[in-house]
Each structure stands twice: as C-alpha cells, then as structure tokens.
Image (cartoon, rainbow, N blue to C red; front, side):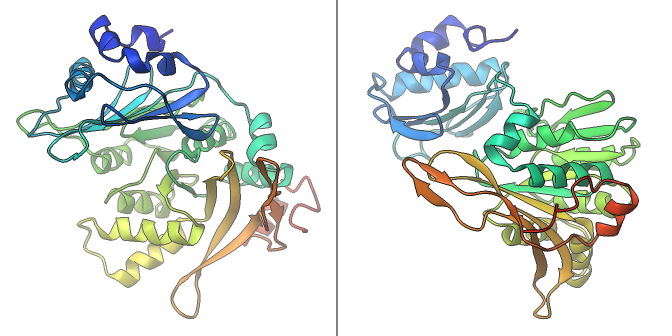
Length: 364
C-alpha cells in the first residue's frame, strides 16, 4: 500500500519537516501554506492556524521543486504554477513568485484511505428518502450533475453514486487527476496529460471525451467539468448515453446549470445560443447540491430536476428534496433533507419499473 511515508524521498521530508506531523495526521485533510510564515490546516472540517513556520522561502521552494520533479512536472519563473497528483492520490497545488506576492503558496489536499460506505453517508449527509431517490435515479440512468464548492465532497458523492449503477454496463471515467475509486466490473479510467517542456503532447479532457464516444460507453463520468469539454458531455447526454455524470463548481443548482451552459459556450462548437440552451436543458436531468456548512460538515442540501425553461427564459429548476432550514444547536447545524412535494417528471417511469418502494417518498 502506498502511504504518505513512502511517497516522498528523504530530501523532501527534510525540507517539509515543520509540517510533517500534519502530513501523517489522519485527522488533517488539507494543509495550506501562505509563504514560509503562515500555515493553516483543515482538521475535522475546520481551518486552524498551525504554530509552525518554515525557516525561509528558499527551504519551502526547494521542497516544492523536489515534489514537482518527483511527479515529472516543473515549476519555475517561466512556469510559476504546479498542479499535480502524488503517488498516494493526494493533490498538490502551488504558485510561486512572481505571481505570488507572499512567496511560495502551497495547498496539499490529502488523499484519505478511510472509505465511507453508502449507509454511513446517508446518516451523515443525506436522508433515507433522499438516498432512495438518488438510487432510483441511478437505476433509471438519469444524467446527474453534482454541484458544490471546493472541498464540499463532490468526488466522495460521485464515487458512492457509482456503486448503484446496475451491472452489465461499460463505464468510462475521465479526470484531470485520478481521484474516483470506482469498484465496478467494467470500467475504464482516463487521465489528462499536460504539455511537455516544448509545449507538445497535451491531452485535454475534451480530447478524451471525444475519444470515449468512439469506445462504446454506456455511461461517461467526468470528474470535474471546468472548461469547453462541457459541450462534449452535453452531446453525450443527448445522444443516447444515459446515466452520464459530472461535477461542477457552483453554490446552487440554478448556478450549476448556468455555469454548465457558460462552459459549453466557451468551446468552439458552431451552435446558436438558443440551440445550446435547449441541449443543456434536455441533457441534464438531476442536479445534486453538496455544501460544506459553517460547522465543517458536508451535506446534500438540495436535489433538483431541470424542466426546460421559465417564461422569462431562465432554466426551470424544481427542487425535489431540500433542507428547508438549518438551526444551530451548540457547535452543530441541524436540518433534514426533506421532500418538497414536487414529484419528478419521470414519476410514471419509476412506477413502471417498480422502483417506488416507499409510497410516501415525495410527500413532505
């Protein structure tokens, strides 16, 4: 098993000695370094300042350079940004001078070996009825977008949802850096590649999506939709590939569908705005909103269905499940994901497939 201890060589460990206890602490999920004098850690969902500092920026920069070389990347004045995945799955991002005015800035998001199962996730972040509805959506092959902010748990949810895909299908998973640990019989993983020092050899998310459409996928899963590859995912959703999924950075389901449209517009597809919006509204069926709350917990706060457009031209986003309010009790925020009373447009499909195990599923 690859652990944090054998990912780094001794030189890197020595340069990172001041934060090494946090690297090995399983309760620390992220380390944020804002120059040599300012270090924060995320522990149990909360940020706190660490009482340590680097000797100077040269020591910190040397550690970042060593990490970059160990994963075949480079970071220097000409290329002052680093975004890479370590051998154990942890993610590192760094920005150095001249782009960073405070010195070397580093974020290390640790890969956790702890696996949460669906039952535990339902207790912590969902509700039994909300969980039942998501399982129904997976069984019926609904196209789902998971929306949320950075660190809200989008990847965790996407992984767990994949455990409810019916057997006998072919999955193609496309990511910038492989984070989705999908346990399925027939699954193919693709990962993008950055250009080399001569600017050659780049393989983008959009390239891999185009290739995947020729590889007979039943479902295409995109780790994060962040650029013009959105149009390829929308095309896949609209051309018979049921059950496609992806994540986007957005704070509400309404924002998520608008962001997806904006990302699709950034591509080079020759398509009118009206036609594009029509494709987006027909492609995406369900948006699941995941939020990191003020108490550090991660919760599903809304599950919505896209139903075309409102009279004013905006997307008609109908909440099927929602947390109506959050009440602070001590250090915790309490609130349940509840049905809103709106039945999904595919209600009859649920009935026809004998999937409505709870007759009260959509009743508040």
